[in-house]
Image (cartoon, rainbow, N blue to C red; front, side, top):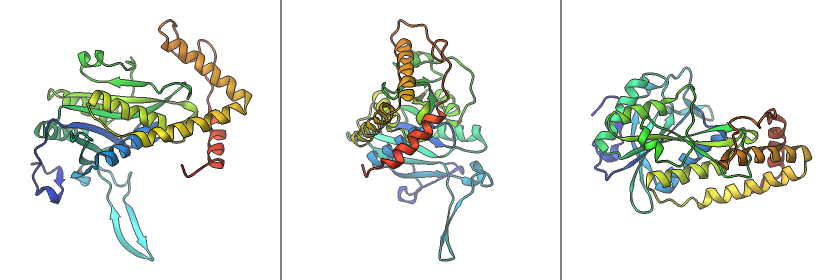
Length: 301
């Protein structure tokens, strides 16, 4: 056992015996446009009935001057402090397959130690595969299916996946470090990233969360009920369609996005960025109007 984490009391300070669990990872504080990955993780926690398995040492991995604890104040009484920390939860899909969910704030320090601790835990618990979740904004229309891109140190594994494979140099998060740490322990590890329309980046986007959950089921071998988040996606699609129909400029921009998307994903076009010579719109004005529209047309659904 390690001093880097504390096992929940109900497990008697002993890690449980699991059957080929899937590990799903999502940390707050890194790239998660529209909170798509965060909402997907919340759905996973709910649908798997996940409970706390262990919590990592906050003093080792969290900088509380940068990420201060929340004080619960009730009529002047400081009732408690919420020391948010990375934690590992355990749940089951509808077929009773074991699922581990690693979530909470992204560690602020000792990344290599944290990655090694998670890799050692994964080996002990018999993890068969790790899936990391994230989302980022791109010039893509809301009228097309959400695309997923993937990352992994395992080149043969990447070639088996039906997702976008990019080539670029970008800053990395803890999820990327975990990919390498688990790969070094011969555990399949990959990241799944939803592409979110840039003009809805400042609001929740259920279609991206649903796409991530679908990918978790597809490559993670899980069976989950995601009907609730799919219903949310349909409602938002209808609202976005209504807004675009009322504004010719927005409709024209959406048409450009659709043309570019179809050319890029048809297999016949050569488009890789932008709109094939047409400047990429910032989407700021549309995003502001979308937010106003959704606020004014909010329903209980």
